[in-house]
Length: 417
Ligand SMILES: [Zn+2]
Image (cartoon, rainbow, N blue to C red; front, side, top):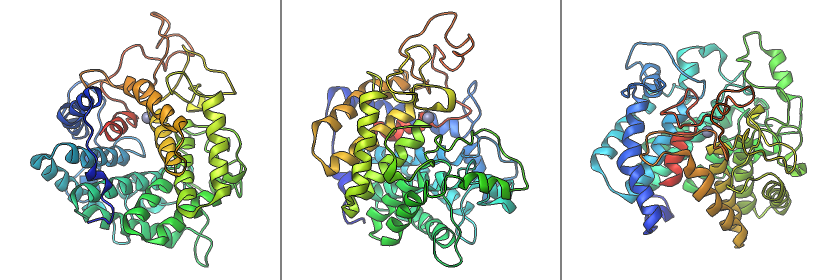
């Protein structure tokens, strides 16, 4: 068992949040399990669990979905871990154990784990860090592994992700024989920090620091990476370096810019590392970014990322209600960041922002029956315009059941639980 099983010492008894948690444990988790298994009619196909079965050789078929489809399974498993603490459920735990076995079987000999590349393009592993989310998916599965270990004491998935962490450590870094690399979508840094906290292994923290410190050292990194590739781009992602916060070193960043989820996931890891290493320069950078974000770029709902163009922060004080983006995941990341800052500094402002986001910009992402979800959380909807007119297509007036890019619904599960 982990040294510090804080997770199992906390019980929430609150008229509002207990009801929300019960909705998630009783309705949302089983519903999403069926979605991930393609058992729900009339919603976007997921195929996320089948991707693992196919990569594991347990089933015939093709990869389907986004290049980061694996992360939907990871977030769901993380949510299940917390759910098992709230409400022990032997059947759910057995099903999660079985899913973990499928994930373990999809891991390659050398520790590599990613169903897209294992099924479709094994020869192109690690060559498109800008777009391909291998490190991002690994980070989410690391979070799931730590959560599952802390909730149940079972380390099967943790062992799998330790092997993946070793694989990553052997590949990326400044030492002889390694290559430079940073993720196109931050998240591995959070995963590695959680692995460090769970196991005490310094190598994981060191690797998290490498990814954070390497970022922005060479702002042309992704451009140079693309030039080396002779295979296609997915072409989904602009090469503006601010988009993924690789325009400057983290210590020098003053303003919250670019894709808001990438930003707050990075800030979360920065704050965690700053706390672990008592790194004042890094903590000061977190504080500057926090102040800029909450004073100039946050909605009254705790929503962040005002423009759908690049799912990004806009300029200071530009917070339109009707063309808003305010992705559910972004407000969830804001809470993670606030939680890390609160660990170092017991100041009310962090808890206030967490509360604001939790009650407003986050749970707005889920319908009261737990079966439909918002990705974009509008503050204003105009019939006939929202979801239809040019520039408003992303502001759908009703919550869909699932998404082609389904990052938000399982993120809500792990947040609420
Ligand atoms: Zn999302």
